[in-house]
Amino acid sequence: MAMGGVQIPRTLLCVNVTQVAVLRTARGGERPDPVEAARICAKTGCNSVAIRLHTDRRHVQDRDVVAIRKAIPENGKFYVEMALTDEMMDIAKTVRPSRVTIVPEQKEDMTSQGGLDVRKNMAAIKKAVELLHDQDIQVSLFIEPDIETIDLSKECGADVVEFHTGAYSSAVEGTAIDREIDRIYRASAHAADIRIQINAGYGLNYGNVAPLLHARELLELNIGQAIISRADSVGLSTAVEEMMAILD
Ligand code: PXP
Image 1 (tube, rainbow, N blue to C red):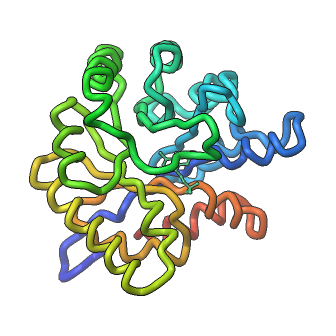
Image 2: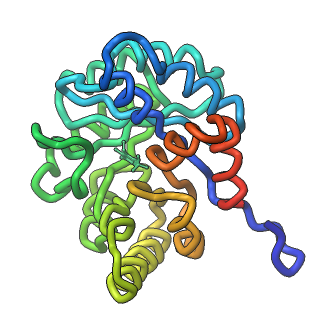
């Protein structure tokens, strides 16, 4: 985007292909294939591809994560979202994604509900950050857009914070939407001030993403459900391109 002659980079897109595996689970079998989806997204030119590996493997399987790492070109960015367990850290060491996003996980969850409790897990997060950094893997923490949690994330050594935008995307009334947007703007400004990279995601779609593009220093948006659903009508490459055009 060019503004006043100054080239401003567009917000980057991370396509989350977890929902492809969710659809596969609905019928069992091999299709649709999240690995093929990841390959198409990477080829279409999004910045990165992400997938969520649950500890109970409810949708995404270990073989998906291994195959996506192989399918994405050497310099391509691949993020795996996982809970803070020893088993998950071992998988990260083996698969070596570009980045691990540490997410909270409750057993009965369908997907991530709310951000990570960084204060409660401080020691374990610091240990995981050290271990992942030793493997040259970046670490992101999926957190609420909250000032104290951002400070704690920085203290843990995280490279990135991904703001959970669930409260924003599920807000219905104008005042609630404004309140959530304001929370994200203030959190982004704070994260930029203390120099930690900011991403955001959850529940974002073609209709609600635009206001986030004004959040200071927000680098990358992680979007899954909306793009995978849109792919049903227009195909995956076009769905990715349409979202990239909005972010541009
Ligand atoms: N960010 C994280 C950490 C997630 O776990 C998910 C869902 O897998 C997303 C972003 C994408 O959310 P959605 O599918 O609602 O766009």
